[in-house]
Amino acid sequence: MQHSFFKTLAFSISLFLLANTLFAQSNDGEVYNVVNVNDSVVLRLNDYVGDIQWQTFNENDGWENLIGEVYDTLLFVADVSTLFRAEVIAGHCDPFYSDTVYVEVRAACPGYPTVADFDGNVYQTIFLNGQCWFVQNLRASHYANGDPIEHLQTNSEWSNSHSGQTGGWCWYNNDSTNEHAFGKLYNWYAVNDERNICPPGWHVPSSDEWEGLISYLGGSSVAGGKLKSTGTIESQDGFWHYPNTGASNVAGFFGHPGGHRLFSGTFQSIGYSGDWWTSTQSTTNYSTIRFLLYDNSSVGIYNLASWREGFSVRCIKIIE
Image 1 (cartoon, one colour):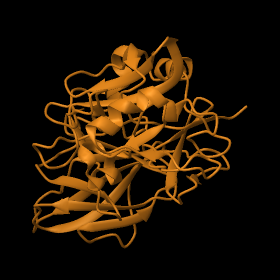
Image 2 (cartoon, one colour):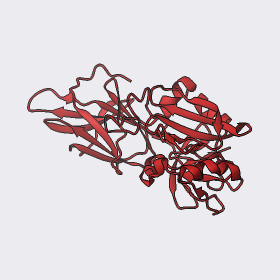
Image 3 (cartoon, helix red, strand yellow):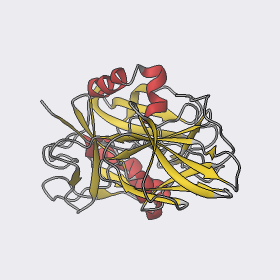
Image 4 (spheres, helix red, strand yellow):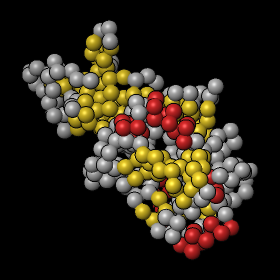
């Protein structure tokens, strides 16, 4: 969305949630952001000189001033998708305008804006094409009925889980600080356990359910970019390594690159790939995963993921 008739300078706007997580994504002079309904959002104008007037765009009347909003930060509660900019006036000069910022508000799952697991972890949800998805990776250490999922730390514990078909979880690199951004990694035996790794009423999505989401987002060649969180490690504003190709997060899915654990117990690819189990078994000892990569905008599929490997999990609920 370009507005070439605007007079602009290099004033940029940063968007923050109150948790101080940056989600800004620049695209040809305009910034796109996806937030959830009722998120408290802060827009902050950077590197300006002069007096400020925040404005929003109305399809019928064009740009309108936000009464009283004349400081470098604008705080509001997200309710509808809105285009913002800041007008800057220095002395008697004609006004200049900042980058425009489109804050897209995505709807949470009807009746389930948040969901808690047995451990008390709370997950935000997003409603896409009749599907309710967790916005974060699963962090549960218990099944839905309260039975514990085994915490498998050492390489031998992880690789030997196959012999007893023991459901297990770990943190990437066995480092608990990775849980906040990336959740836990689980082997197939935990994912496929009848006690349900997801909260009651929710389940691990099948490969076909993933395909429904991918088709809704325009197909596998572009859906990955719409699912990936924005920013890069190198720019200190994201979790992906450069270049994080095509990332826009327009789906509000916040797909982070949590990496995976091989059957040997070795950890790989944090920052480079996000990998999620499906509930679809492809053959004996193997199932299907879906994955995102740092260097392209597609959604990959791999049908020979060993049951002894560890991947992230998202939970889903279908709304009829």
